[in-house]
Amino acid sequence: MEVGSLIIDVIKSKYFFSFIFGSIGGSLLSLFINYKLKYWGVLSSSVILREIDFYYNDYGVSKDTDRNNAEELLINFDIEFYNGTETQKCVTDIRGSFYKQLSLITDGFLVQKKMLNVSEILNEVYIEPKQYKRVECCIMVGNRGPVLDEIIKGFDSVIIEYQEIQHKKKLKKKSQKLQFSINDEQKSSGGH
Image 1: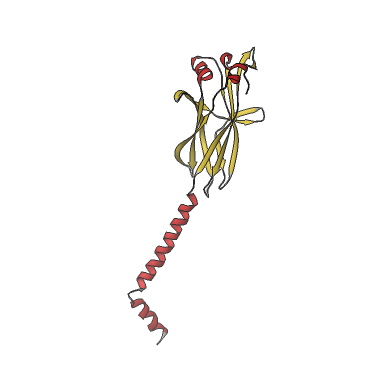
Image 2: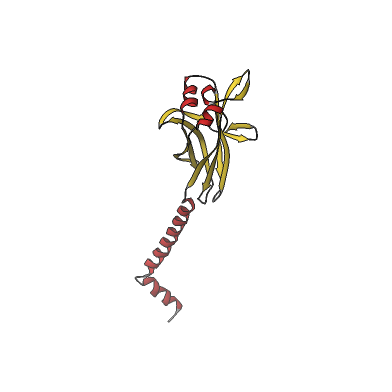
């Protein structure tokens, strides 16, 4: 039997095209699964309260006070992110909302990034694949008014919300609850 006639017999075989299509289909399925597994996983986060400070303004200088006399509020906290995917993730539009007994007082306070004694608006946080990232943050509330008084004197929890972005595509909003209780010592003595 010649090689040429062997090749022709294989091509005429009823299994030849099923082998070809099976090979191509298996390769495409493998590529698709690898692509999906690359993005499989979640971006998880947790919020850790560090301190709450109440201040009053004494001729341009902020001084510690108790909650009842406060004109300004500073909440220091950390947000820890873990990127469980194989691709870089970005978090943006990080905001805080104040609640009293599960009722919204006000929302939309921008979270700021703490750097030494300076803070700036936290616009974007990039988290590398399979990495943890801790960001020191704060929310500052000032300028007297009815909403501010209700926040300072009545809030018992803060919900931190952020927008997750992957490959220029916005994914759903996520939120983490920063819940705490203000004890009597904090109400009367200021500080933490």
